Length: 55
Image (cartoon, rainbow, N blue to C red; front, side, top):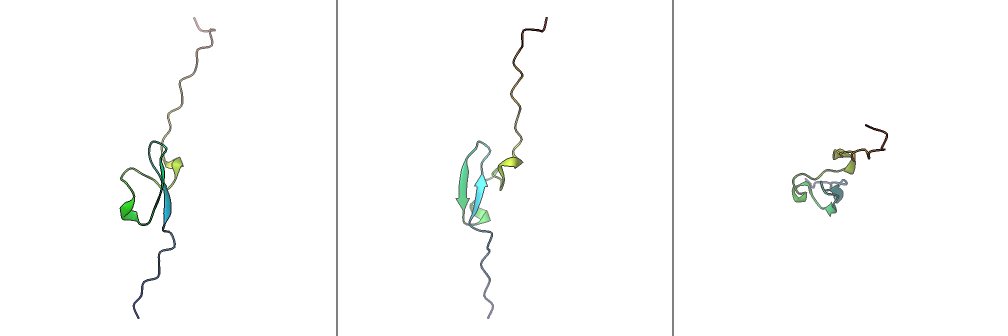
């Protein structure tokens, strides 16, 4: 018999660049630009608020 074992890593959670979250059944279903971890997206820190001490 030449049966393939099911891939235990699917279905899997994936995260979009704008904070979207989705579950996909196979790699081919994951939209381009999505990642398997939200930590893979670079975040831009918010600009510091002026304190009034600066001239």
